[in-house]
Length: 84
Image (cartoon, rainbow, N blue to C red; front, side, top):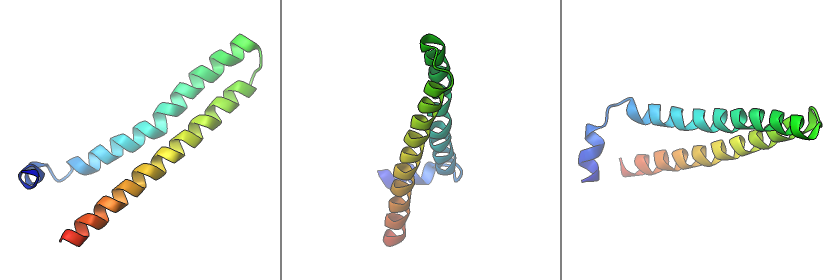
């Protein structure tokens, strides 16, 4: 049944899914960190240190997620090549 569903998927859909997933993991944490960091700086009068700390943490989280997603995709490609 998985083979039937795979043949019905448009050729561009897997690439678009990967693009959206990676874009979300790049942009999402950074955007959240910018707002949270600025809010914390205003609240604790620590400008710009909490902003910089929050964006640094978000960057590390984004990079970690990109590495994990990249490794999963490489493994999926390797498995597909072995089956072919």
